[in-house]
View 1 (cartoon, helix red, strand yellow):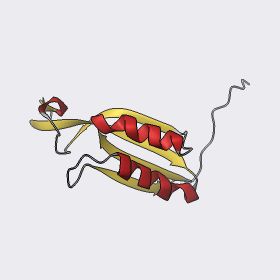
View 2 (cartoon, rainbow, N blue to C red):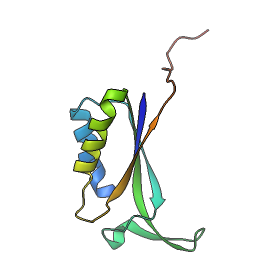
View 3 (cartoon, rainbow, N blue to C red):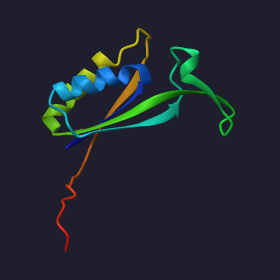
Length: 107
């Protein structure tokens, strides 16, 4: 099993999620994060008092899939996450040893 993790501009996340869902990927999670991507506009940037510098609001996307599906997930993220910048985010892939569902059974 693979985990594909990406850091994406907020304005691109909807297209990325729709492309992944249309591609059959259903184990997605995403969260708001702050990072060092080059901002597309001033609306994406804020000043971090903790870091003492400007940061960009972005989305961290995580996709869990079978090994043979990981390359397709990466392709979809890279295609639909484009912004026109030379680097519009980053995609990482790692191997997951195991995964278990949390079922509804009690006791």
